[in-house]
Length: 208
Image (tube, rainbow, N blue to C red):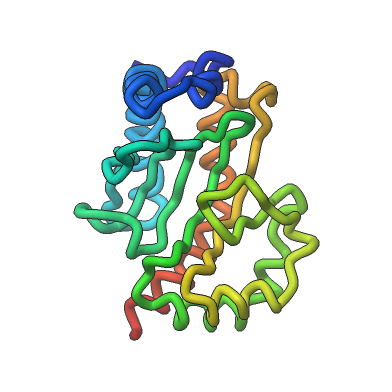
């Protein structure tokens, strides 16, 4: 099946009370769509990068009480996991969709990757004006690319829990997310612009 878009019901999932109830809705409403999106993006990114990448869909397996406030798919060049690697994400909170190139705190080579990003600060600042940056994948907060300063990259380097995610946040009523074809094209266009940054992060990991 082809992805046909996200609906209001998908976002309403995060208003459901209780871990079991919300997880059942995530599994039945959202994860099948992630599978559709992810299958197309894996093929696309594999071709663009020239190497195989793998789809991972968040299972939220560690949760025992509190239901998740968001959910996502991740694509990485490692078959067994994505958290310790530079990766791409698509996911939902209750009020927006995010499309990230993600570098999270579990990266073993976070400091080396951060140093490379600092060296390429000017190139990062030249990315599209509508890009935003998150320093914590657990929170909705983001800053506009134009507000990014060197100190945020230095914090990513120096603070163990600091993260760096860059890409788009699309509000739940954005017409692009309601149209499957338009949404996937938007994601591909976003990733095309982020691939050079992803390659920089990968190279920093490889040359450690």
